[in-house]
Structure formats: structure tokens, C-alpha cells
Length: 317
Ligand code: ADP
Ligand code: MG
Image 1 (cartoon, rainbow, N blue to C red):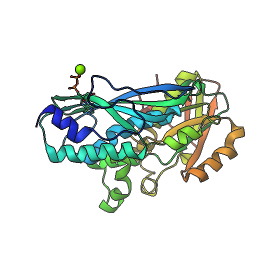
Image 2: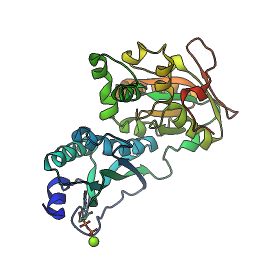
Image 3: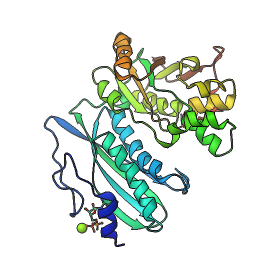
Image 4: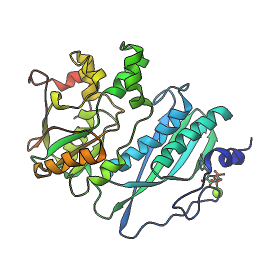
């Protein structure tokens, strides 16, 4: 199979909002008037970000989904993506599954795959995504204000727990693993939430490296601090059953790969955000407050102050 045939068969689909797509030297797109282009890229390397023998459909979904999550965190509407992929061999069943997973995510969020590059090499997947956001209205990390409430969508810790089980660092019944493993393999980027946060949130980030690390990015960019309470951090029943274990607290606070949004908003928007949670049918939890100093303080389950360095959280400084 030639490189061109491979691109045609697996990575060429009809587009929705693209002037010229896969097949020429460059793709052509038009930006909607009054909009800014938001651009982000994420690379996934076999052995580092995923297991080389993982399910190719889930890998295809996740390669795009982690990029879509960055659009969500900016309040942007994802529209176009490119895919650069290095493949050790042409394995057609693998490519079929991978591209089905990728396009399933693309269809879910109405994203056109408009180009890329295909080469032989150790399995590496690099996706660039582009989306539109009303000019000047993107929700940045740097916008948090003193006394803002800190919110988190969905539940945290499932992805880190599923990974720990797969790596045999943690034991869980198969039925419990079934409840949480989708969080790791097929994350659901919070695009509708991100866009609904225009006019509500002062800052936002998606949680890809763990709550403390990613909230830490907001604090650093905004030159502020925070107090959060572990007992307010949203978790699944499966994680809840084990929350007394230090290892599990660390999964909730410092585990990555959840792709939920963490955002801050003035307290006078509290009711509006609670309403939004109902409209979107998505849990939104108020976990703490932004403070004027630059410390990040976490209260544990008995209201004690946790030593967050012990959580494996080492990016903060
Ligand atoms: P060039 O040699 O001009 O860089 P290529 O032969 O690499 O072009 O690619 C041919 C066309 O296929 C281009 O439009 C490119 O964007 C697209 N393409 C290549 N690989 C992929 C891929 N994995 N997914 C989507 N489009 C791709
Ligand atoms: Mg060319």
C-alpha cells in the first residue's frame, strides 16, 4: 500500500467547514468574522503516553480528544485538526480501528481533519487542533481574581486509578475497574462547558497533569494562591471507597489524564454555574477559593492541612 493510498483510505473524509482539505500541499480554511483562531498541539509517544499494544480505536479517540480538551479550556469551538503520524509498519486492521476512533471523536465535536504527515518510524501521534473563539474573549490561565470560587467539572482520579491498576501498582476488582477505565481510554472533553463559561469564568485550564499541577498553572499565571478542600473535590464511587488511602488521595489531587476543566469565577456567578451544571447535565463542584497570597493550601478529610509535596506534586515551584 502506497503512502498516498494509506492517506486516502484512512485519513480522508468529507469535511464540514473547510475550503480545501487533504490532498494538496496545504489546506485552506476561512475564519468566521469576529473570531480569533485558537491553536494547540499535543504529541503522544508509544511507551511514554500510551502502551504500544493498546486498543487502537481508543488511541485514535484519545489522540484527538486531548487536543479538543485544550480548546475546551480556552472556551474555543474546535473546528480543524491535522494529524502527523509515524508508524512502524502498515497494519491495516490497526489503521482501520485507529482512524475509526479518531473520526468518532472528530464527528462528536464536528472537527474536520484537514491534513497532516505520514511517515515510517516508532509509533508517534502528533495532532494539531484549531478552533474559533470570539476575539478577545478566550478564557486564559492568567485571569483568576482574589476571592474567585474554584470549580471542577466531572470527577477526578478515575484515570489515575485505572492507570495504576494497569501498571499493577493498585488492586481493584474487575467490576470496579470497568466503572473507571473509560476515563483513561476515552476521555470526554468538556467543549460545551468551556463555551458556556464565556462571561462567567475568569480563568480556566484542563486537567491533564493533575488538579494541583494544573490549578498551580492558573495560580502562577494569575500571581495568586488558593485554598481547596479535598472533601469537596468530586470523585466517583469507586475512588470514594478507597479515599482513606494516601495513594488514592494522590490520584485525586495529583493524578493526571482526567481532562476535566478547572475554572475560577466570581462568587456572584455561583447560582448561574449551578444552573449550568443542570443544563449541561454535568457535575460542577465548588472546591475552594482564590487567595491574595501565592500559596496553594489543601485541607484534608479531617480538615488537616495536607503536605502537598507528599502527593507526588512537584511542579509547583
Ligand atoms: P507533501 O509531500 O506535500 O508534504 P504529503 O504527501 O505528505 O504532502 O501529503 C499529501 C496530503 O495528505 C497533504 O494534503 C497532507 O496534508 C495529507 N496528509 C498526509 N498525512 C496525513 C494524515 N496522517 N492525516 C491527514 N492528512 C494527511
Ligand atoms: Mg507538498
